[in-house]
Structures are given as structure tokens and as C-alpha cells.
Image 1: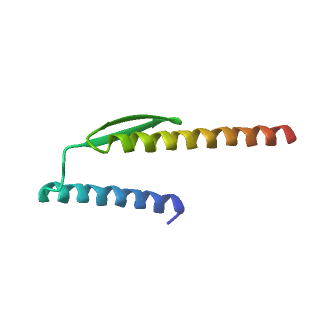
Image 2 (image 1 turned 60 degrees about the horizontal axis):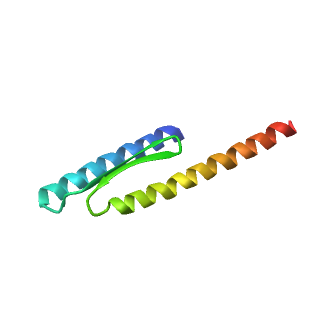
Length: 86
């Protein structure tokens, strides 16, 4: 198996494990009302949250967005520098 197939398999297994975990928690009554969703369009997050963990979600998404913007800017700077030297 090549690396891409292994990464796909790991991602698929993580989704299945997450689904099973949420299902078991909902059956045993361990779930309280609340949820969150984060969608990244480029380096910009669109975050929607409700419940007690919404502020934490928004803080984490802002930190991730800032990190993604910095990585993008640094990558473009390096690309531009390498392009000039060639």
C-alpha cells in the first residue's frame, strides 16, 4: 500500500471510531445538548457553535486560522524568493 492509501484508511477508521463513540454515548445517556461545526474556506474559518463549549471552539478556530494565514504567507514569501533566484 502506498502512503495515500494508508492515510485514507486511517482517516476512514477515525471517522468510524468517532461515529461509534458518539452512538454509544447517546445510547448510554452521556450526551448533553450542544454541538459545533467549523468549515474552513481557504484560511478562513466559519464557526458555528452552541452549548457550553462554543467559546472554546471559536477560540481554537481563530488560532488555527491565524496559523494557516501565517503558513500561507511564509510559503508565498519562500516561493517568491526561490522564483527570483532561478
